[in-house]
Image (cartoon, rainbow, N blue to C red; front, side, top):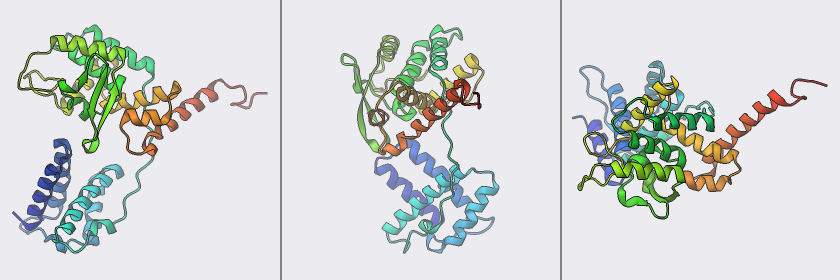
Length: 302
């Protein structure tokens, strides 16, 4: 293995030891593997990490752009490379984090597309009706109810253990980004759906996970995403639903009903209020649409 390849493997091991999730480490491994691929032309050895300079990184970013990667994707991949060189600088393998000298591509500002409360409820009611005759209808409904009712990230839902549930007081202990824990209230419908599922959940003494797959093991974030895609495709004709869409809907609907922005920040587990404020933009956009449609002055009427 080349010195750059070994450096990447050492960095990934360091990420895992630091407590980063398996999903995060895999994502970094994919992005850094692609970076190594770019620097490994046929029958040539990749450069030593000290030989990677700003020009090399700019050529790599152009290569990514020519492969139709979006600005958002390139930003993510650059963040992975910056993390690698920050680690190598700390270990004394390189003199400086050269990736910090590369300008980050500007990402287009895009507001999240948010389903209405009626659309979400219709979808969840369709899941509850079990017209698709799925093998685990109680589990699937509980997944939808918790994603929308609690605003959880898909990784947080997959990471829930039985000991994280306070079923009598209706609270969840959620482990968010950076292993930060928070307490999240469990609303009525979500609590009822969860109880129905737990009554059917197979007893697996060596598996602490709340949500299990058909093998009786922990359901992965990818597995949850596939469940949502299946139902959305067959119940609404839209295969694009992602778990984060229900999280967006949770926050936007709370804000529209008058919830305090800082309270929503706490519920979502956002470190910065500015991250939560994007939902304000969504609500204002919806408000302007209502105004333009209904107000007599919106179209220059007398």
